[in-house]
Image (cartoon, rainbow, N blue to C red; front, side):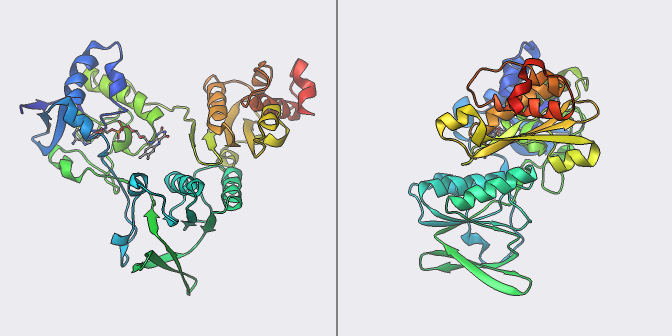
Length: 398
Ligand SMILES: Cc1cc2nc3c(=O)[nH]c(=O)nc-3n(C[C@H](O)[C@H](O)[C@H](O)COP(=O)(O)OP(=O)(O)OC[C@H]3O[C@@H](n4cnc5c(N)ncnc54)[C@H](O)[C@@H]3O)c2cc1C
């Protein structure tokens, strides 16, 4: 096993964020990153401002693929925490547990809960905050909670604070309290999903002058440059937007800046994102509450029980909400719950990225009958409320 000292390097985040850079036209990235990504493993020894790289076979890097440098953030220390499981433990199960408590109803917790609920597990989802899916639009989160409940899941928002976990003959008991009232819930398995923290401790980043934040994510500036100016980081390890779609361009930006110097800022990206729960939900742009805080907005909502394709397929649950700036008439955001929510939000993302006015979107003759066509219905509705001409589409919002 050889060794190499790298001066300009993508520090960590070597899968989704770096492989696409290898496919780019940049010879430098092909050459350099092939070295770093395909066959190297960063050692936990960083000294003198350089990152140690062990040259191992690509095969062994692949083998470690799922050993992500991320952990789930621990709950505040409570008795019996070792009895709980992570989402990774849940995915590794080889049989369906009869019951499960999921603590934390963000994207990951909701996904674990939804999947095991569909498998037939009796699931109770606990959220300390006032609502599940706190980063989603308020109406989407409320609709998701209602749908989860309708499907048999117990959803407890604002449930209080956990006091302890204890072993029972069939699993784990969680003791919690709210306003002085103590309660408990039991299940075969307790999955804790209360947020991510980066597993960077073993890299000894401080030795290279690379700062991390409270959750151990690597601090980066707009060029994805760490506090050590010759070391760059991309993807999840920065804790910015932990999605494949954002890790990909991050890798390109970091690679470019590592080689050419800080020339390419990461910029503001349109960021459509969603989750493949049942029901599926998705967002692009600010939530209605956030948009309202900074803009004079109009929202147009179309329910799925009156859109042709949803009716044909019997997928009538859900809605599409378009958020439009009254002054510029441009589309700011789109929030969807129900069948093909993510695909619909992605079409809206293209309109947002193109800076389209809502009346322009309203006039695009999308194919019929399709799920995404709901966007045009919402655009027509919004355009009409704004007294904008939408021509031949005008009858459709009736
Ligand atoms: C269960 C789950 C479901 C998800 N679903 C989605 C989804 O549906 N859509 C979506 O967009 N995102 C999803 N994500 C998030 C997505 O996987 C990440 O955002 C994305 O993989 C980040 O890419 P990355 O390159 O930063 O990190 P990764 O893809 O995690 O790659 C990091 C790589 O670095 C390697 N590595 C770690 N330490 C070292 C070291 N010391 N030396 C060398 N290599 C090292 C790891 O082995 C790994 O191969 C999901 C994540 C999880 C956990």
